[in-house]
Length: 244
Ligand code: NAP
Image (cartoon, rainbow, N blue to C red; front, top):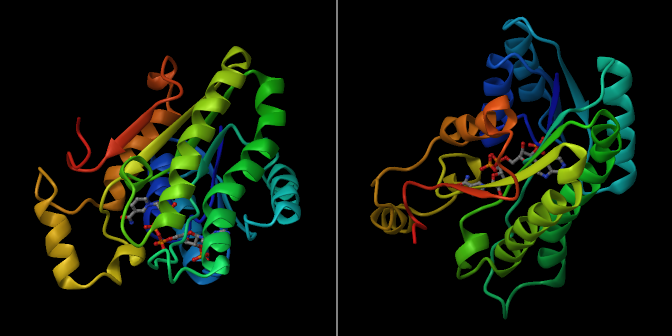
């Protein structure tokens, strides 16, 4: 069975791609700018005994996504059964200073891309009456955050999008779930100052920063047979940050 992971060369996407390979999925590795890390990951995955290929595409561009799905199917001789919408960016700024481009870039990459990829994946999934869509949201999509109106809106959008896909395609054998990571150690969070990191750490009941592997294990569960009765859910992987 084939899984496509967007933005798979680094961070959380990389960990998900590896974990799925360990769970016997063939993996299509999408990257945008990180070609060398994508190639390295591809070799690491092949060494696990499953198929892997890399595919360059900017997933915020619909035409490139259409081409991506065509190339994946041709090169890997099977359609995508598991789609992980992981590619994401931040362009943090206080709202009064936020430029329209900062708003648009984040919505295009974090939300529009998930729509484009899901639309392309659903054609084959509904035909085969099986599919798993897993969208990487964020806890800030549930809570909002200062300086992240664009990012939080994109992640809240992806949660509502997930629930809509879950409702619309449940009868066709396709489940859709979201994962809401909290504070995970990747390039995305590396740029935060030590003071901000300390503040975040103090707000995490488990008092630890998450690892990409923590998110990857949740994604592998949602991709597996074990989750077949779960759809339209948001699984927070956040050390307890957002518990009710
Ligand atoms: P990261 O290390 O910065 O990696 C982001 C990945 O997204 C990169 O591999 C990048 O690909 C890819 N990407 C960005 N724009 C793309 C585009 N237009 N087309 C294709 N790929 C694109 O970030 P991360 O922390 O692993 O984040 C992964 C996901 O988790 C994101 O959706 C993020 O919002 C979410 N998340 C992260 C955290 C956290 O604490 N780290 C918390 C909550 C949610 P290239 O390098 O090839 O350009």
